[in-house]
Length: 108
Image (cartoon, rainbow, N blue to C red):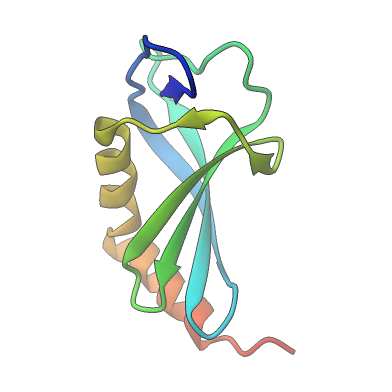
């Protein structure tokens, strides 16, 4: 992860993710991701409750990844390696099925 303004960073390796897909509107599905980190790549010490929101189409294609700490956008951005890991998970059949199920739900 790269903190905005820093010149040095560390690449994180994710072991797995807990996730929840929720329909935002007629165009987007938000997939809230809570990563489980590999032991050799811990999160930066100043992050309290790190999560990622993957904004996806109703077909499950990730369009944007948003880093959050304690539920609000944070000052870290993802490296390409981290984005690749997240996108591969979001494109997995399990998550795509959850996205399609969320897309089929009509908000009441």
